Amino acid sequence: MSIKRNILANYVGQFYVTLIGIIMVPMYVKYMGAEAYGLVGFYAMLQAWFMLLDMGLTPAMSRETARFQGGAIDALHLRRLLRSLEGVFIAVAVVGAVLLITGSSFIANNWLKVQRLPLDEVQNAVMLIAVITALRWMCGLYRGVITGLERLVWLNSMNIVMATGRFVLVIPLFIYVGTSPTLFFSYQLLVAIVELLALVAQAYLLLPKVSAGQRTSWEWGPLREVFKFSLSISVAVMLYLVGSQADKLLLSNLLTLTDYAYFTLAALLGGGVQILGAPISTALVPRMTKLNAEANEAGLIRVYRNATQLVCVMVIPAMLVLAFFAEQVLWVWTGNIEIVSKAKSILTPYALANGIQVLGALPLCIQLAKGDLKLHMVGSGLYTVLIIPAVIWGTLHFGASGAGYAFLGVNVLFFAFWVPKLHGRLVTGLHTQWLLHDVMGIFIFSTAAAIIMNEFIIWPTTRLNVAVAVIMAGGVLCGVATLSSSYARNLISRKWHAQPAR
Image 1 (cartoon, helix red, strand yellow):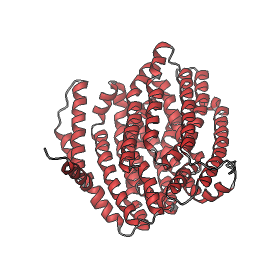
Image 2: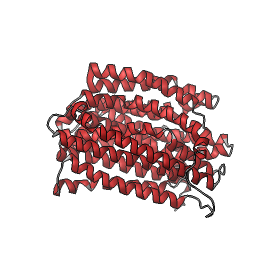
Image 3: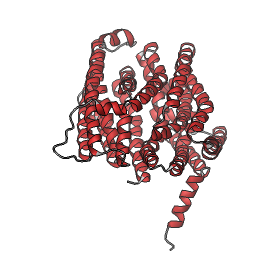
Image 4: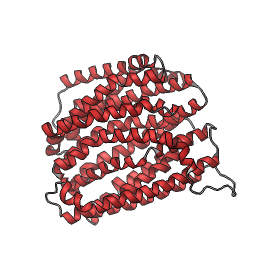
């Protein structure tokens, strides 16, 4: 199971899932209308908040599976842990869905600022959203098993198939059947059921076998053993989600559903930057956990620093394109002047903030590998204490763009002052080398190139030509970032010299 192959699979899968989701958004707005699309944004926000119920058990499952790979636990222990977690997940999913269904009338009538949609239609959509959210959240447990076993090629192939069903195959439904929110979310419920069943089947197929006489019924013991780790994750994730999703929750109440749709468009596009770094982190944690279990500290740090440069090469150019050329990107994406005018001031800060957040989250990979999350919990608490009042103030005074700049400011502070603390705790002397050698060179040269292009590019007038110009600008930034990375240069050089002479 090559880590490079897994990273490539993660990129192909997550890039496709993100790209197809972004590409289809203008089609959703066209067929459903902006206000109905606001419900899709509300659904996405609820999925994020539902992660609060995870209690850190999904990362714990993934970590224990990776530890099995490293020989730290046996097959029976792993199966007992999964069975125990299944009981917890089913119970929590049912309770969470029931609570959302019970509150659907309040959400439709009081929380969301609905203008034209029938309220009973909105309430039906919210009830469907509750069930879909619970099912998709349960998928995370089985994804954790498959990820811990490093079977990421299959997992990403599955994600591509399901994303196609979720985002693309709904369009014929719009054309030939109808475009109501109830119909849309009914279809999404069917896709969620298929996805969950497929993941359950694959996870159990991959799990190591145990003898027929060994029981794997629900037990409290396996949960108690991972509870300390999962509690650390749970508190950290809770604090992070509260901080990172506070703006979305607040704006869902302060903005009309139509304006919330425009905010969702910009936040979705800006959040795409995070997806570019996620594939590397997903492949990185199981491998680093295995190296830590083998007491290979030098190998762990080498993998971490090389992965950091790869993340920078992928994330920084995308972040800069969205930030510096927000108006052009939105015009190419939607072709809608109203969306461009309302979303461009939101996209710039969200793109920058998400890019910086990806880099600031990289030390978490080492913490997960080592099972030391104390500082992460403290940092998440500080982040939440800063982000919530900042976002509230920014939103109340400057609307959605104010929330974006508050989000950006807090992430800059976190990166500048907290990341050095994390590195210092984990590996002595790591931070200076990491920052100067693995991050800043790529960032400085890429930003300089973006500033120069922003100053001198004369944008064409047609949408197609603007798209070509944006792609070329992105290509230049990718080239600059690649040449600024010592690891990327060495990788290219090795590949070049490995080619047979002709």
